[in-house]
Each structure stands twice: as structure tokens, then as C-alpha cells.
Length: 150
Image (cartoon, rainbow, N blue to C red; front, side, top):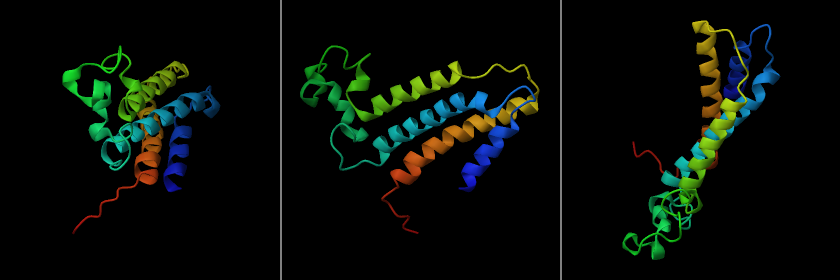
């Protein structure tokens, strides 16, 4: 909860007199979603042992190939190149991350304030939104099963 309040306060602190929080909401929301899908990619790579071949990123990359054998060649046209996102969760999540980041840039409101402090606060706000999305997926939903032996 403290992180969410910090995120809201930080986002509000980047506004100038001519800008409103609602102008930034679409861009911040897409940034949050980009972080969430990046968290899903990380979770599929590091925290999904025991899941099927689509979700377990340690072995899902083999889905790109016929019978999961590299020597057999691509499973279907484009499975090793432009359609790789259809073969496993890490590639799919990575594709969505890029799409959401692009949408965040497309919806970024124009801003003539180029003062270093203002730019720095906006960078912090967008990083906080992205990290919030990543942390919810990777840190809360897919908690580590491993305990620190110390």
C-alpha cells in the first residue's frame, strides 16, 4: 500500500500547471502493463517449474521446433522468427511488453518543460509504474518457492 501511495504522489509531482494527472493516466497504465508482462516473462523463466511446456521458460524454447528437437527444424512457418511469440510464454510476454511500452510512448502527453528536475521526476514516476506492475506479477502472484537457507 505504501508503494502505491508513493507511486501516486510521485506521478502527481511531475505535473505542471497545464497538465493534469488524467493526461498521464493512459501512458502510465500502459507502462504498468508493460512491467506486468515483463514480470510474467520473468516468472515463466524462473518460477514456473512443474508447469507445462508452454509456461516453463527453461524448456519452452524447444516448442519452436518439430517434436521439440532443434535438428528437426522449425515446428511451423515463422516459429523460430516472427511468430516465436506463439510458441511459449516468455516470447509471448516479451511481445506484449514491447507492445505496451510502444503504447505508453504513443499516449505520452506533450510536455515543454525540459528542466532536469521535472524530467527526473517523470522518469521516476514511469519507472515506479513499471516496477509496480512487475512486482505484482513476479513478487506477489508468483512468489518464490525457495527459502533462503541462512
